[in-house]
Length: 428
Figure 1 (tube, rainbow, N blue to C red):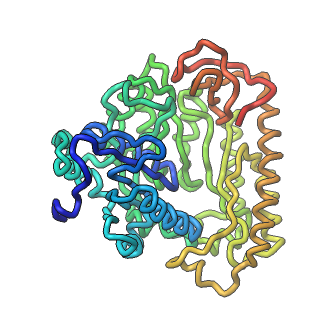
Figure 2: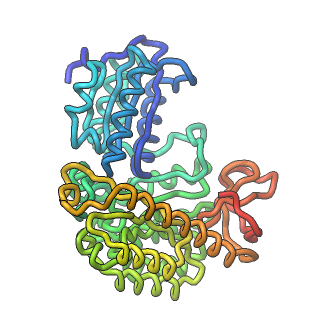
Protein backbone atom coordinates (compact mmCIF):
# COMPACT_ATOMS: atom_id res chain seq x y z
CA UNK A 1 0.00 0.00 0.00
CA UNK A 2 1.67 3.20 -1.16
CA UNK A 3 1.20 6.64 0.28
CA UNK A 4 0.05 7.92 -3.11
CA UNK A 5 -2.78 5.42 -3.00
CA UNK A 6 -4.10 6.72 0.31
CA UNK A 7 -3.73 10.47 -0.13
CA UNK A 8 -6.78 12.59 0.72
CA UNK A 9 -7.62 16.10 -0.40
CA UNK A 10 -6.40 19.04 1.64
CA UNK A 11 -4.18 19.23 4.68
CA UNK A 12 -5.65 21.44 7.38
CA UNK A 13 -9.30 20.93 6.41
CA UNK A 14 -9.66 17.16 5.96
CA UNK A 15 -13.15 15.94 6.90
CA UNK A 16 -14.75 12.53 7.19
CA UNK A 17 -18.14 10.88 6.92
CA UNK A 18 -18.81 7.46 8.40
CA UNK A 19 -21.41 4.95 7.21
CA UNK A 20 -22.01 2.05 9.59
CA UNK A 21 -23.98 -1.02 8.55
CA UNK A 22 -24.82 -4.20 10.42
CA UNK A 23 -24.35 -5.45 13.95
CA UNK A 24 -23.43 -3.89 17.29
CA UNK A 25 -19.84 -5.04 16.87
CA UNK A 26 -19.64 -2.93 13.71
CA UNK A 27 -21.00 0.01 15.70
CA UNK A 28 -18.29 -0.37 18.32
CA UNK A 29 -15.62 -0.64 15.64
CA UNK A 30 -16.97 2.43 13.85
CA UNK A 31 -16.79 4.36 17.11
CA UNK A 32 -13.12 3.40 17.16
CA UNK A 33 -12.64 4.77 13.63
CA UNK A 34 -14.15 8.09 14.69
CA UNK A 35 -11.99 8.42 17.76
CA UNK A 36 -8.84 7.73 15.78
CA UNK A 37 -9.76 10.17 13.01
CA UNK A 38 -10.61 12.94 15.46
CA UNK A 39 -7.39 12.42 17.40
CA UNK A 40 -5.40 12.80 14.20
CA UNK A 41 -7.01 16.02 12.99
CA UNK A 42 -10.01 15.01 10.86
CA UNK A 43 -13.32 16.75 11.46
CA UNK A 44 -16.78 15.21 10.98
CA UNK A 45 -18.32 16.69 7.85
CA UNK A 46 -21.40 18.89 8.04
CA UNK A 47 -24.64 17.60 6.55
CA UNK A 48 -24.84 18.12 2.81
CA UNK A 49 -21.15 18.99 2.47
CA UNK A 50 -18.81 16.59 0.61
CA UNK A 51 -16.18 14.99 2.82
CA UNK A 52 -12.59 14.29 1.86
CA UNK A 53 -12.78 10.79 3.39
CA UNK A 54 -15.73 8.40 3.67
CA UNK A 55 -15.45 5.23 5.76
CA UNK A 56 -18.03 2.51 5.00
CA UNK A 57 -18.10 -0.29 7.57
CA UNK A 58 -19.93 -3.07 5.72
CA UNK A 59 -22.21 -5.99 6.55
CA UNK A 60 -22.75 -9.24 4.66
CA UNK A 61 -24.89 -11.33 7.00
CA UNK A 62 -27.63 -11.80 4.35
CA UNK A 63 -28.05 -11.28 0.64
CA UNK A 64 -30.17 -8.23 1.41
CA UNK A 65 -27.46 -6.80 3.66
CA UNK A 66 -24.95 -7.24 0.84
CA UNK A 67 -27.22 -5.29 -1.54
CA UNK A 68 -27.57 -2.47 0.99
CA UNK A 69 -23.80 -2.38 1.41
CA UNK A 70 -23.17 -1.99 -2.31
CA UNK A 71 -25.82 0.71 -2.49
CA UNK A 72 -24.17 2.55 0.42
CA UNK A 73 -20.77 2.58 -1.30
CA UNK A 74 -22.27 3.84 -4.56
CA UNK A 75 -24.13 6.55 -2.62
CA UNK A 76 -20.90 7.58 -0.88
CA UNK A 77 -19.17 7.94 -4.24
CA UNK A 78 -22.03 10.10 -5.60
CA UNK A 79 -22.49 12.26 -2.50
CA UNK A 80 -18.79 12.91 -1.89
CA UNK A 81 -17.19 13.62 -5.28
CA UNK A 82 -13.40 13.46 -5.07
CA UNK A 83 -13.41 11.76 -1.66
CA UNK A 84 -11.36 8.70 -0.83
CA UNK A 85 -13.84 5.96 0.10
CA UNK A 86 -12.43 3.40 2.52
CA UNK A 87 -14.50 0.19 2.47
CA UNK A 88 -13.94 -2.28 5.29
CA UNK A 89 -15.87 -4.89 7.24
CA UNK A 90 -17.46 -8.25 6.47
CA UNK A 91 -18.70 -7.60 2.92
CA UNK A 92 -15.30 -6.19 1.97
CA UNK A 93 -13.64 -9.33 3.34
CA UNK A 94 -15.85 -11.65 1.30
CA UNK A 95 -16.00 -9.71 -2.01
CA UNK A 96 -13.21 -7.10 -2.08
CA UNK A 97 -13.12 -6.97 -5.89
CA UNK A 98 -16.80 -5.97 -6.06
CA UNK A 99 -15.99 -2.72 -4.27
CA UNK A 100 -12.53 -2.00 -5.68
CA UNK A 101 -13.93 -2.20 -9.22
CA UNK A 102 -16.65 0.36 -8.50
CA UNK A 103 -14.31 3.35 -8.72
CA UNK A 104 -10.64 4.22 -8.47
CA UNK A 105 -11.41 6.22 -5.33
CA UNK A 106 -12.42 3.08 -3.43
CA UNK A 107 -9.78 1.56 -1.15
CA UNK A 108 -10.71 -1.82 0.32
CA UNK A 109 -9.04 -2.25 3.72
CA UNK A 110 -9.12 -5.43 5.85
CA UNK A 111 -10.54 -4.75 9.31
CA UNK A 112 -7.28 -5.76 11.01
CA UNK A 113 -5.38 -3.11 9.04
CA UNK A 114 -7.88 -0.28 9.37
CA UNK A 115 -6.22 1.58 12.26
CA UNK A 116 -2.83 1.50 10.53
CA UNK A 117 -4.42 2.68 7.28
CA UNK A 118 -6.15 5.61 8.99
CA UNK A 119 -2.92 6.51 10.77
CA UNK A 120 -1.17 6.72 7.40
CA UNK A 121 -3.95 8.94 6.09
CA UNK A 122 -3.34 11.46 8.85
CA UNK A 123 0.37 11.56 8.12
CA UNK A 124 -0.07 11.94 4.37
CA UNK A 125 -2.67 14.67 4.86
CA UNK A 126 -0.37 16.73 7.05
CA UNK A 127 -2.10 15.99 10.34
CA UNK A 128 -0.57 14.81 13.56
CA UNK A 129 0.53 11.22 13.01
CA UNK A 130 -1.23 8.49 14.97
CA UNK A 131 1.94 7.50 16.75
CA UNK A 132 0.10 6.77 19.98
CA UNK A 133 -2.01 4.13 18.28
CA UNK A 134 -0.43 0.69 18.44
CA UNK A 135 -1.74 -1.51 15.59
CA UNK A 136 -1.96 -4.50 17.90
CA UNK A 137 -4.58 -2.73 19.99
CA UNK A 138 -7.07 -2.84 17.14
CA UNK A 139 -10.16 -0.69 16.96
CA UNK A 140 -11.80 -1.00 20.36
CA UNK A 141 -9.64 1.59 22.12
CA UNK A 142 -10.44 3.47 25.29
CA UNK A 143 -11.93 6.94 25.20
CA UNK A 144 -9.58 9.85 25.82
CA UNK A 145 -12.05 11.62 28.05
CA UNK A 146 -15.60 12.87 28.56
CA UNK A 147 -15.41 15.24 25.58
CA UNK A 148 -15.50 12.26 23.23
CA UNK A 149 -18.51 10.64 24.91
CA UNK A 150 -21.61 11.39 22.85
CA UNK A 151 -23.89 8.57 24.05
CA UNK A 152 -24.57 7.25 27.53
CA UNK A 153 -24.82 3.56 26.61
CA UNK A 154 -21.55 2.54 24.98
CA UNK A 155 -20.15 -0.68 23.62
CA UNK A 156 -16.86 -2.43 24.23
CA UNK A 157 -15.74 -5.13 21.82
CA UNK A 158 -14.49 -8.11 23.82
CA UNK A 159 -14.55 -10.89 21.22
CA UNK A 160 -14.43 -11.42 17.45
CA UNK A 161 -14.96 -14.29 15.02
CA UNK A 162 -17.05 -17.45 15.25
CA UNK A 163 -16.29 -21.17 15.28
CA UNK A 164 -19.84 -22.13 14.30
CA UNK A 165 -20.96 -22.55 10.69
CA UNK A 166 -24.73 -22.08 10.47
CA UNK A 167 -25.86 -22.96 6.96
CA UNK A 168 -27.43 -19.54 6.30
CA UNK A 169 -24.46 -17.49 7.56
CA UNK A 170 -21.16 -16.39 6.05
CA UNK A 171 -19.94 -14.22 8.92
CA UNK A 172 -17.65 -16.99 10.19
CA UNK A 173 -15.85 -16.78 6.84
CA UNK A 174 -15.63 -12.98 6.90
CA UNK A 175 -14.55 -12.73 10.54
CA UNK A 176 -12.53 -15.91 10.92
CA UNK A 177 -12.10 -18.09 13.99
CA UNK A 178 -13.20 -16.91 17.42
CA UNK A 179 -10.70 -14.74 19.29
CA UNK A 180 -10.91 -12.99 22.66
CA UNK A 181 -9.50 -9.64 23.70
CA UNK A 182 -7.24 -9.57 26.75
CA UNK A 183 -9.22 -8.98 29.92
CA UNK A 184 -6.97 -6.06 30.91
CA UNK A 185 -7.86 -4.24 27.68
CA UNK A 186 -11.58 -4.81 28.21
CA UNK A 187 -11.23 -3.53 31.76
CA UNK A 188 -9.27 -0.46 30.62
CA UNK A 189 -11.85 0.46 28.00
CA UNK A 190 -14.80 -0.14 30.33
CA UNK A 191 -13.30 1.99 33.09
CA UNK A 192 -12.65 4.81 30.62
CA UNK A 193 -16.27 4.71 29.49
CA UNK A 194 -17.56 4.72 33.06
CA UNK A 195 -15.29 7.59 34.05
CA UNK A 196 -16.40 9.47 30.93
CA UNK A 197 -20.04 9.35 31.99
CA UNK A 198 -21.47 6.19 30.46
CA UNK A 199 -24.13 4.69 32.68
CA UNK A 200 -24.16 1.42 30.75
CA UNK A 201 -21.36 -0.52 29.07
CA UNK A 202 -22.47 -3.11 26.53
CA UNK A 203 -20.14 -6.09 26.02
CA UNK A 204 -20.16 -6.93 22.32
CA UNK A 205 -18.79 -9.73 20.17
CA UNK A 206 -19.59 -11.83 17.11
CA UNK A 207 -19.93 -14.91 19.34
CA UNK A 208 -19.69 -13.29 22.74
CA UNK A 209 -20.37 -16.41 24.77
CA UNK A 210 -17.23 -18.06 23.42
CA UNK A 211 -15.08 -15.53 25.30
CA UNK A 212 -12.07 -17.30 26.80
CA UNK A 213 -8.97 -15.35 27.78
CA UNK A 214 -6.44 -17.56 29.54
CA UNK A 215 -9.25 -19.58 31.06
CA UNK A 216 -11.34 -16.53 31.98
CA UNK A 217 -14.89 -17.00 30.66
CA UNK A 218 -17.58 -14.38 30.16
CA UNK A 219 -19.00 -14.64 33.69
CA UNK A 220 -15.48 -14.35 35.14
CA UNK A 221 -14.85 -11.24 33.03
CA UNK A 222 -18.09 -9.68 34.25
CA UNK A 223 -17.17 -10.40 37.88
CA UNK A 224 -13.86 -8.63 37.35
CA UNK A 225 -15.63 -5.64 35.77
CA UNK A 226 -18.09 -5.46 38.66
CA UNK A 227 -15.28 -5.53 41.22
CA UNK A 228 -13.31 -2.82 39.38
CA UNK A 229 -16.34 -0.50 39.21
CA UNK A 230 -17.68 -1.12 42.70
CA UNK A 231 -19.26 2.10 43.95
CA UNK A 232 -19.47 3.63 40.47
CA UNK A 233 -22.80 4.37 38.79
CA UNK A 234 -22.36 2.00 35.87
CA UNK A 235 -23.96 -1.26 34.82
CA UNK A 236 -23.08 -3.87 32.20
CA UNK A 237 -25.18 -5.48 29.50
CA UNK A 238 -24.53 -8.62 27.46
CA UNK A 239 -25.29 -7.68 23.86
CA UNK A 240 -26.09 -11.15 22.47
CA UNK A 241 -25.23 -14.69 23.43
CA UNK A 242 -25.84 -18.05 21.80
CA UNK A 243 -28.01 -20.48 23.82
CA UNK A 244 -25.30 -23.15 24.08
CA UNK A 245 -22.93 -20.62 25.68
CA UNK A 246 -25.16 -19.75 28.65
CA UNK A 247 -23.54 -21.63 31.53
CA UNK A 248 -24.46 -21.98 35.21
CA UNK A 249 -21.98 -19.28 36.25
CA UNK A 250 -23.61 -16.72 33.98
CA UNK A 251 -27.12 -17.63 35.12
CA UNK A 252 -26.06 -17.25 38.76
CA UNK A 253 -24.42 -13.89 38.05
CA UNK A 254 -27.54 -12.51 36.37
CA UNK A 255 -29.59 -13.53 39.37
CA UNK A 256 -27.17 -12.21 42.00
CA UNK A 257 -25.84 -8.94 40.59
CA UNK A 258 -28.80 -6.80 41.57
CA UNK A 259 -29.14 -5.32 38.10
CA UNK A 260 -25.49 -4.29 37.70
CA UNK A 261 -25.43 -6.95 35.02
CA UNK A 262 -28.69 -6.25 33.23
CA UNK A 263 -31.25 -9.00 33.64
CA UNK A 264 -31.75 -9.02 29.92
CA UNK A 265 -30.38 -11.46 27.35
CA UNK A 266 -30.59 -11.42 23.58
CA UNK A 267 -30.82 -15.15 22.93
CA UNK A 268 -31.08 -16.01 19.19
CA UNK A 269 -33.66 -18.73 18.52
CA UNK A 270 -33.80 -18.61 14.67
CA UNK A 271 -36.52 -21.29 14.54
CA UNK A 272 -38.83 -23.11 16.93
CA UNK A 273 -38.70 -26.30 14.85
CA UNK A 274 -36.07 -28.89 15.75
CA UNK A 275 -36.04 -30.08 12.13
CA UNK A 276 -35.32 -26.60 10.83
CA UNK A 277 -32.73 -25.96 13.54
CA UNK A 278 -30.94 -29.16 12.50
CA UNK A 279 -30.88 -28.06 8.87
CA UNK A 280 -29.53 -24.67 9.96
CA UNK A 281 -26.82 -26.60 11.87
CA UNK A 282 -27.74 -24.80 15.06
CA UNK A 283 -26.23 -26.83 17.96
CA UNK A 284 -29.46 -27.23 19.96
CA UNK A 285 -32.99 -28.47 19.42
CA UNK A 286 -36.25 -26.70 20.28
CA UNK A 287 -36.70 -28.56 23.57
CA UNK A 288 -33.17 -27.68 24.71
CA UNK A 289 -33.80 -24.00 23.97
CA UNK A 290 -37.09 -24.03 25.90
CA UNK A 291 -35.50 -25.81 28.87
CA UNK A 292 -32.77 -23.14 28.99
CA UNK A 293 -35.38 -20.39 28.95
CA UNK A 294 -37.32 -22.04 31.76
CA UNK A 295 -34.11 -22.38 33.79
CA UNK A 296 -33.33 -18.70 33.25
CA UNK A 297 -36.79 -17.62 34.37
CA UNK A 298 -36.59 -19.80 37.49
CA UNK A 299 -33.27 -18.25 38.47
CA UNK A 300 -34.20 -14.74 37.42
CA UNK A 301 -37.99 -14.19 37.29
CA UNK A 302 -37.71 -10.59 36.04
CA UNK A 303 -35.48 -11.53 33.12
CA UNK A 304 -36.19 -9.87 29.78
CA UNK A 305 -35.48 -12.06 26.74
CA UNK A 306 -35.16 -10.82 23.16
CA UNK A 307 -34.37 -12.96 20.14
CA UNK A 308 -33.76 -13.32 16.39
CA UNK A 309 -36.02 -15.49 14.23
CA UNK A 310 -35.70 -16.32 10.53
CA UNK A 311 -38.98 -16.82 8.66
CA UNK A 312 -39.09 -19.03 5.59
CA UNK A 313 -35.81 -20.90 5.84
CA UNK A 314 -35.51 -23.33 2.88
CA UNK A 315 -37.86 -26.28 3.31
CA UNK A 316 -39.77 -24.73 6.24
CA UNK A 317 -43.36 -26.00 6.16
CA UNK A 318 -46.38 -24.19 7.53
CA UNK A 319 -46.53 -26.64 10.43
CA UNK A 320 -42.87 -25.95 11.27
CA UNK A 321 -43.52 -22.21 11.16
CA UNK A 322 -46.42 -22.70 13.58
CA UNK A 323 -43.97 -24.46 15.91
CA UNK A 324 -41.89 -21.27 15.85
CA UNK A 325 -44.89 -19.13 16.78
CA UNK A 326 -45.73 -21.51 19.64
CA UNK A 327 -42.12 -21.42 20.87
CA UNK A 328 -42.10 -17.61 20.83
CA UNK A 329 -45.24 -17.56 22.98
CA UNK A 330 -43.80 -20.12 25.39
CA UNK A 331 -40.58 -18.11 25.77
CA UNK A 332 -42.48 -14.85 26.42
CA UNK A 333 -39.98 -12.83 24.41
CA UNK A 334 -39.91 -9.11 25.15
CA UNK A 335 -38.69 -8.34 21.64
CA UNK A 336 -38.35 -10.33 18.42
CA UNK A 337 -36.15 -9.33 15.49
CA UNK A 338 -37.97 -11.16 12.68
CA UNK A 339 -36.38 -11.54 9.26
CA UNK A 340 -37.56 -13.23 6.09
CA UNK A 341 -34.84 -15.64 5.01
CA UNK A 342 -32.44 -14.00 2.55
CA UNK A 343 -30.22 -16.13 0.33
CA UNK A 344 -26.56 -15.40 0.98
CA UNK A 345 -24.34 -16.53 -1.88
CA UNK A 346 -21.62 -18.86 -0.66
CA UNK A 347 -23.72 -20.55 2.04
CA UNK A 348 -25.16 -24.10 1.91
CA UNK A 349 -28.73 -22.88 2.42
CA UNK A 350 -28.56 -20.58 -0.60
CA UNK A 351 -28.18 -23.44 -3.08
CA UNK A 352 -31.02 -25.57 -1.73
CA UNK A 353 -33.73 -26.38 -4.28
CA UNK A 354 -36.58 -26.05 -1.74
CA UNK A 355 -36.53 -22.27 -1.31
CA UNK A 356 -39.72 -20.88 0.21
CA UNK A 357 -41.70 -18.57 -2.07
CA UNK A 358 -40.98 -14.85 -1.43
CA UNK A 359 -44.61 -14.04 -0.70
CA UNK A 360 -44.75 -16.85 1.90
CA UNK A 361 -41.56 -15.63 3.60
CA UNK A 362 -42.94 -12.09 3.69
CA UNK A 363 -46.26 -13.24 5.15
CA UNK A 364 -44.56 -15.33 7.83
CA UNK A 365 -42.25 -12.50 8.82
CA UNK A 366 -45.29 -10.24 9.09
CA UNK A 367 -47.01 -12.76 11.38
CA UNK A 368 -43.92 -12.90 13.56
CA UNK A 369 -43.77 -9.13 13.82
CA UNK A 370 -47.44 -8.98 14.79
CA UNK A 371 -46.83 -11.57 17.49
CA UNK A 372 -43.74 -9.63 18.60
CA UNK A 373 -45.84 -6.51 19.21
CA UNK A 374 -48.33 -8.52 21.28
CA UNK A 375 -45.65 -10.26 23.34
CA UNK A 376 -43.81 -6.99 23.99
CA UNK A 377 -46.95 -5.36 25.32
CA UNK A 378 -47.66 -8.37 27.53
CA UNK A 379 -44.11 -8.41 28.89
CA UNK A 380 -44.20 -4.71 29.67
CA UNK A 381 -47.61 -5.02 31.35
CA UNK A 382 -46.11 -7.53 33.79
CA UNK A 383 -43.47 -4.95 34.73
CA UNK A 384 -45.79 -1.99 35.45
CA UNK A 385 -45.34 -0.86 39.06
CA UNK A 386 -42.10 -2.80 39.59
CA UNK A 387 -38.71 -1.17 40.13
CA UNK A 388 -35.70 -1.27 37.82
CA UNK A 389 -32.53 0.68 37.34
CA UNK A 390 -32.70 2.91 34.29
CA UNK A 391 -29.94 4.89 32.61
CA UNK A 392 -30.84 8.40 31.49
CA UNK A 393 -30.05 8.67 27.77
CA UNK A 394 -31.22 12.24 27.25
CA UNK A 395 -33.44 14.70 29.13
CA UNK A 396 -36.81 13.05 29.70
CA UNK A 397 -35.80 9.64 28.33
CA UNK A 398 -34.24 6.59 29.99
CA UNK A 399 -33.52 2.93 29.17
CA UNK A 400 -34.55 0.30 31.69
CA UNK A 401 -32.64 -2.84 32.60
CA UNK A 402 -35.27 -4.84 30.67
CA UNK A 403 -34.56 -2.75 27.54
CA UNK A 404 -37.56 -0.44 27.40
CA UNK A 405 -37.29 3.29 26.86
CA UNK A 406 -39.48 5.13 29.35
CA UNK A 407 -40.01 8.75 30.41
CA UNK A 408 -37.34 9.94 32.84
CA UNK A 409 -37.79 12.53 35.58
CA UNK A 410 -36.64 15.96 34.51
CA UNK A 411 -33.41 17.39 35.86
CA UNK A 412 -31.39 14.19 35.66
CA UNK A 413 -28.00 14.11 33.92
CA UNK A 414 -27.53 11.91 30.85
CA UNK A 415 -25.62 8.80 31.92
CA UNK A 416 -27.08 8.85 35.42
CA UNK A 417 -28.44 5.57 36.81
CA UNK A 418 -31.72 5.96 38.66
CA UNK A 419 -34.03 3.47 40.35
CA UNK A 420 -37.42 3.98 38.78
CA UNK A 421 -40.90 2.54 39.05
CA UNK A 422 -42.03 1.24 35.67
CA UNK A 423 -44.86 3.48 34.42
CA UNK A 424 -47.97 2.39 32.55
CA UNK A 425 -46.52 3.27 29.11
CA UNK A 426 -43.18 3.00 27.38
CA UNK A 427 -41.66 5.07 24.59
CA UNK A 428 -39.91 2.34 22.60
